[in-house]
Image (tube, rainbow, N blue to C red):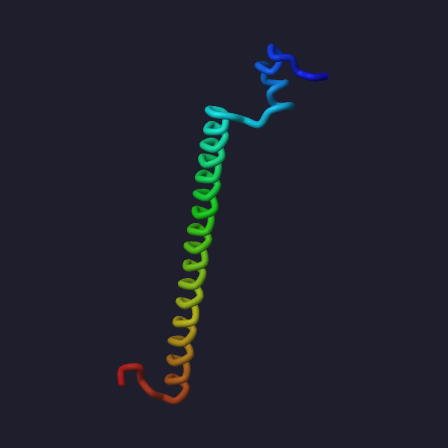
Length: 86
């Protein structure tokens, strides 16, 4: 059903027959920009949190390896009869 001039003013008819113009275009653009800013922030926050988590895992692993090294050295020295004081 074709839109009359009076019906073009209604939002339903405008959506069906015309692309956004003027203020509507600006509103759509700014809403899209705001959405993308929020999304980008969420992505970056997730990446930051995953880096922190990863770095804690690396630190824990490094600590375990260092403790194992010290225990191995102490056991080796004890097995050889050496004191740990040089």
